[in-house]
Image (tube, rainbow, N blue to C red; front, side, top):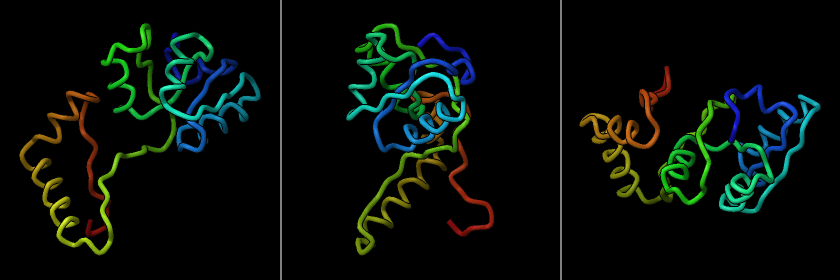
Length: 141
């Protein structure tokens, strides 16, 4: 994608996977600009293929997805070109509510990753920069 700031997407053709947080926010932004167009796709692979083929000018995805796709080398010419001014969308670990053992294990696992420095190490490898704080101010967890 040949853009160097989010504002430079104004008037461009952009796309994302239908129904995702990024697609909803991006489509609303295109409508607010009243310039350019938005295309929705059924899968992330379709979005990246369309981007690599020049059918769209850019897309908005989470930093982990962007890093992984660029590093894969499957879509020639793609690059990460900046931050979108949208709310942060974190990746999560989930389990059934009644699976207390699994939920406690996941909680302990994440705690260990943060305390050992592995969380920052993985964040550096796949995203770059300072890993976000996983706590919420004035909340127990």
